[in-house]
Length: 73
Image (cartoon, rainbow, N blue to C red; front, side):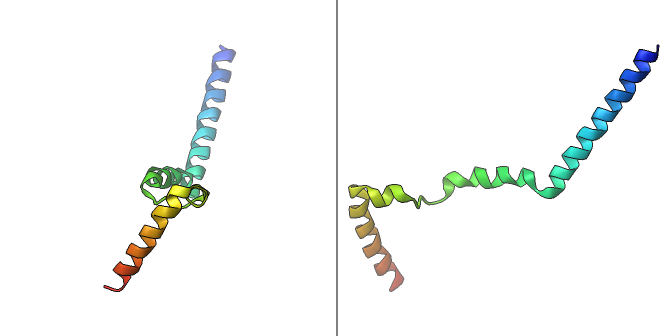
């Protein structure tokens, strides 16, 4: 019978510790990281891959000329 009481107390301590950890992480904003990651595929690519490839240099010239034309409007 003493073992059951000890198991209940240990289980309650683990549940309370888990809740404390969860709420501290919730208030610190750690779970908002998922929102940022879900929007990441929608962002424009700006990396070294464009600078290193020859085809993207040709395309970037076209994009730059288009951007200059749109900025005048």
